[in-house]
Amino acid sequence: MKPRKKHFIWMIVVCLSLSIVLAGCGTKGSSDGNSSKSSEPVKITIFQSKVEISKQLEQLAKIYTKQTGVQVDVWGTTGDSYAQQLQTKLASNQGPTIMSISPGTLPGSEADKLKSYLYDMSDQSYVKDIAPNMALKINGKVVGVPYDVEGFGLVYNKSLIDPKDVTDYDSFVNTLKQMKAKGINGLGLSQEAYFLIGHIINTPFAMQSNPQQFIQQLNEGKVTMSGNKTFQDFAKFMVAIRQYTSNPLKVTYDKEIGDFANGKDAMIHQGNWAYPMFSSYKLKFQMGMMPFPLDGNNKLAVGVSNNWAINKNASPAQIKAANDFLNWMFTSKTGQDYIVNKFKFIPAMTNIKASKLDPLSQQVLDASRSGQTIPWAFNDFPSNMVVNNLVQVAQQFFLTPSMTGQQFLKALDQAWQSGSGQ
Image 1 (tube, helix red, strand yellow):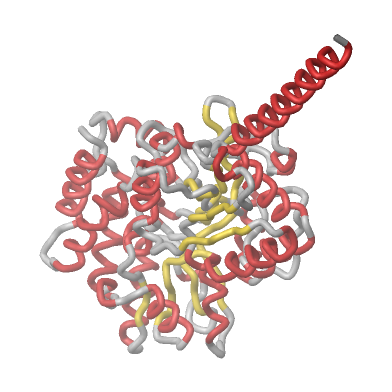
Image 2: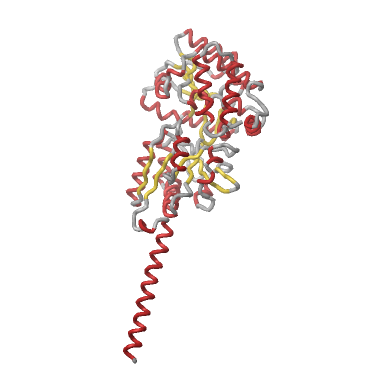
């Protein structure tokens, strides 16, 4: 009997061992979200909208992969169509792991539309370093970490323009006329949706007493742009721009930068993000940034350009890898160097110090610290409103010299109604 009892006990031990091994395999598989690939190395993907940092981000990803072994692929983007591409990729369960999400959380905004894909980052260690009131939150949860602080306005050539001469409608128009008489384009816009209309139309929205409330009422059909005094004044500026400057529909972003760098444009409506593009030129002048002087506005438009977010439908292993990558980018010497010196960002994280900023970024930082700013109201526009609706009206406006300012505003109202689903 003793030999048979020993054999029985041995069988029990073997069975228990196998059970433990199998159970262990099962546990590992569930944490990856894919048991058949549990031994495969983790790979994450990044899809973001800021074309200016694409190459630098790819370089940073390669450094991270070399240091950690975690593969990080950066997908290319065309900028204007980013939001549509992102929605398509998410809806078809094709990733990405890390993505950029525009600020703004009103119903219909990009963050509101994609909230079911946004991972709750609230308990991550890097969240404590986000500058006050700059985290992207939905229902009290942090779902986005700001890229940076950015600002835009009229970028001007200091050898041609004195900001004291451009403070209201009359002085603005006089400047355009004077530049035209000298054979210089007074103000450069370009054909891309945000550079043609998205940024410049921010000013009349931002100058409303309550921009978010105005946008909400516009969405509900309770107010119109054509019936608003500030927008009526804005339309006068746009008519003057059409009359006295080059047709922006013939100008790309690259050409706009080149024309300004070569002294062909006295001013361009741009932001501090454009400054790195001037590195390709030997500038013979200094530049500055001043407010777009609608109704005497004397403040730059400053806000958070975008947010890093994580796709909560990625596997748990990918979500952990994404958090690890972001934490490394925000806290390591290499990551911080890229944020400040390669991306040329004005940090929105309190643990990242900025020094030796370019002149446009320094003006934005000064405005931010002094409070001389107006908000980025367009972040609360219904998703894709600029790209899908407003830009077509702007194109028609610049193609049709006979279109009046009021007709322009009524066409914008109709486009808004269509884009907001009224």
